[in-house]
Amino acid sequence: MTEPLPRAAYASDPAHSRGRLHSESESPTRSAFQRDRDRIIHSSAFRRLKHKTQVFVFHEGDHYRTRLTHSLEVAQIARSVCRIFALDEDLGEALALAHDFGHTPFGHTGEHALNEMMADYGGFDHNAQTLRILTKLEHRYAEFDGLNLTWESLEGVVKHNGPLSGNGEKPVPDAITRYNTRHDLEVNTYPGPEAQIAALSDDIAYNNHDVDDGLREGLFEIDDLKDVPLAGPALQEVLDKYPGLDRSRLIHETVRRMINAMVTDLVSETRKRVAADAPQSVSHVRALDHPIASFSAGMQEQDKALKSFLFEHMYRHKVVTEQNERAHEIVQTLFRHFFETSADLPDDWRAMANATNIEEPARARVIADYLAGMTDTYALTEFERLGYKVP
Image 1 (cartoon, rainbow, N blue to C red):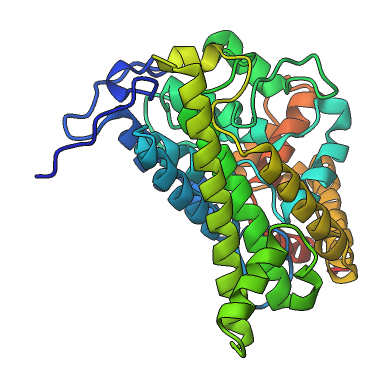
Image 2: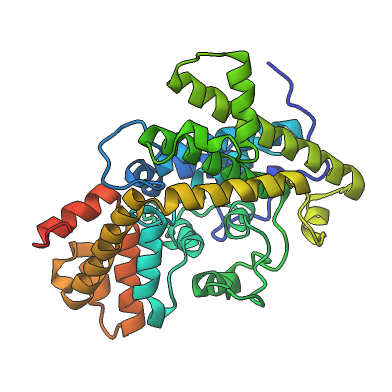
């Protein structure tokens, strides 16, 4: 049997986890974080990611990313980087696999549409929705709601983009605040290193694979990338090394070099920070006033430029904006319909929406939970079942 790699002093240690909200006997064959990862994979929310899109909606192709394939790609990057730093790979993988659970159908458009409908009822935030799914909405176990994940997994999901101080422009979502009163996730600190790496792995996968999908969908052309930081140099390297390469291979070779450049930079910058901060525990990482995992300043600028390019050439492309308008109308129409006619909800959701003495905000949250759990295809099916014509 291969001996396990020595664990970094500042890694999250499943043997010293802060535990679960509901006490359980630990598995004799799996660590606490392995068990979290397995529960995530076997959840209903994970399966639904298969039919939730990243950017594209209403498309017929099978080659574009869904939330599921994206999450698997994030998990691969996160696990690889965690291994380099002798961190807990299972925790990094678990966080990567669960990070998109709270997303609505039709990508960010669905979230914006639902947030508008919930404006008077506490709003809608996909990160808070992920926590609701993991702690409340998954109904699999006899003794508790949710998946009863470890403190470290829940902390990593909630704080994967950094501390939630509530002092900035965006307040801490109510669902997170309420849960925090029962199970303090210390939302005003940075999370452990595995969560930080999972978040940056998401950034790497998301941007680069949107380039891939955007090219294959014809939203922009290969020549458009030549002056884009990160993409341009990668493209030129491929053109120089493989003149006359067919388009499909050219795209893949370019994107894989972009991913490699970002991962290499992440590893290099994080090593510098680890050397400078010399953390001796995961608590030390959380106590820092800055993340220990990061891109360099130069890569952050390149990443920002790439995002700007994608925003202009992809997310604002006429094809995408027209689809987004249709998706926005579908989500809001469904919300209004179910809010006004709860009899059309499935039995279990109808029972919750019509519970005795339920107040309007709680009823609205039931509708939001139901809609957020829909896949793209199910939302379209429900829209037509209720007698509406897809715009």
